[in-house]
Image (cartoon, rainbow, N blue to C red; front, side, top):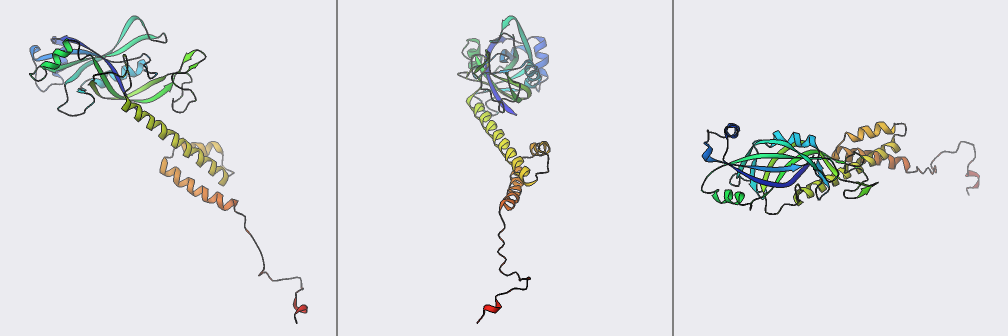
Length: 288
């Protein structure tokens, strides 16, 4: 599972209507009046290729829509109760007619509607949203896979590189299978133009990629050792077994098979000096 942060934009709305208030009341502990609530729209993430050569597929955007309802907005990804500034009460995928992505697909994005309870403490924030100062947000979510746009395999395991062209096609990662939406944050400088990945998420992704490569290497080594120790075993069976094992199991079995292989390859030296001669001959006649 990959953790993703994407940057996007804020648009002021102002006073909530009755439909908005009904949705807000489902999240609030008491009914709020229209004059108590400030609402604004957020472009959370989209299906276009970003500067890190990644994009959400439309299914992932649809999956994220209900996951973001009720999620709090914070500042600069600082997760604390005091830092919560707003909450999303509605989200849906919006398709813009005539707008295309970089690679020619119909453009769409996930739009969220957020609300704040008007207080003296957030008057400045509301003024900054209305004045266009607070314009960007960055969202945090998790996806199951990052798929290569060229071959359709897991991007961490395929030979293609993001940002490179293959037969005229730009290689990029497709974020699929949204599993969680845990926050959205006001940020000073977004990492991307419409949707982007923050450096912290990039580090997490790189660590996950290295971990997958490490496990892949352990599994390959186990299959090799098991094949040497058990030559009658089918390779496909060994591969299937190795794919189900985790690090400690792989290390334990590899150690076991390595010892067995070492014993098989170590030649036994038989000197036989203490063996009795049975041919009736001995050196006795030469003794003085």
